[in-house]
Every structure is written in C-alpha cells, then in structure tokens.
Length: 257
Image: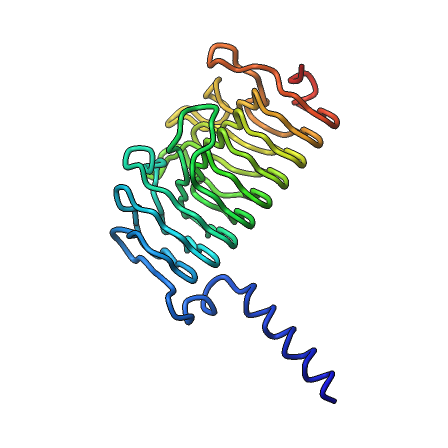
C-alpha cells in the first residue's frame, strides 16, 4: 500500500509540473502581465494575458513555463533588439490562439543572443511568432493561425532566424504576410507546410519573397509542401542553399547544397 501511495504521489507531482497555466500561477513567485511591462526578476512561471513588452535592459529568469494566452502579445515585432533585454525560460513557452510572441532579436544576424528556452516553444493558431537569435532546448512547433482575410487589421510577418533548435522545427498551416526560416541550426527535422502568403487586397500567394527557407543547417530531414508561394532560396535577400544531414523532400528538394 505504501508503495502504491508513493507512486500515486509521484504521478500527481509530475502532472502538476506539466500544467502551464493555473498550476504555475498558484506557485509563490509566479508573475503575470495583463498589459504593460515585464520587469527584471526571477519567477516560478509567467502568464501574459494582455499586450506586454519586456522592460529596457531587463534580465528575466522564468524557472518554469511562459504562457502567452489567447489573444495576448509579448514583445510584438521582436522589440527586445531595441532595448537590450533578455529572457530565460527553463520550461516551455506556450502561445495561444491569436497571440503574438516576439523573442530574441537582440544579437547580430548569424549569431546567438542571450535568450534561452530550456523546453519547447509550442504555438496553437498564433497570430505570429518572431523568434531570432534564441537557443531552444527542445522543439519549435507552430500549427495554424495567422489572419483570416487580407483586410484584417492584425497583419504580421513570421520570421524564424538565427536560432539553435536542438529538437525539430515545424511550421504548418499559417496565413499571413511573410514567413522565413533563415540561418537556423536545427538538430532534428524541419517541416514547412501549407503556409499561405497574403498581401493586403491582393489575395494569397502574392508576396514573391515569402516562404524563404535558406542558409539553414538541418541535422535531419528538410520537408516542404503545400506552400504558396513555394519554399525558396532567395539570393536577392542574401539566401544560400541549405545544408541537410538527411533528405530534402517536396518543395525543398532542390534547396540544398
């Protein structure tokens, strides 16, 4: 009986640790922002429910998960670059429907910045992600999201540049302005699928520079399909073919060295 009780207690503890929202919010030292500034500090978890930015020069340490809730935004357009702020998350970054995450972009192109995510970045129907110069210990996965029409007021680009991702990079089913996967080092697979570029008033597939998949180092497979416009290397934007340890498949079949 004692053995079963100990096992049950261990399972409950693991489940509580995995919950990104309410469980973390109840912990002492958890932070939240419903609008305004994320300040320097150490938090056991953090929840963003409004429009928030990271304070100029801030050093934020989150020993847990960061949740950007449905419709919220944190550092839209990657504003850390202009304020020399940095963010460290030991757990996962979770981005809700219609939300925006700007993370990193506080280092020169082609280099790593100070921002780190120990776990995964997981986005479910976000408005956009802007992730650059970041070290990610797990996967970066985004499914769905973006705008529903070319006249939508919330119209974003989706840059994923200059990151080291130790898991997989999967971007699927997003609609918006421009999307690029550029100069990333990914230990696992890269999948870019069913991305639709929109240009206000002009319909899908009208931004010829979108879906740039270039100058990446991919340890696994590089798989691209269903994108409009098709995945491409754009020399006019400084793009070079990708280095792939596995196979390049679909629209990315000819985008390797």
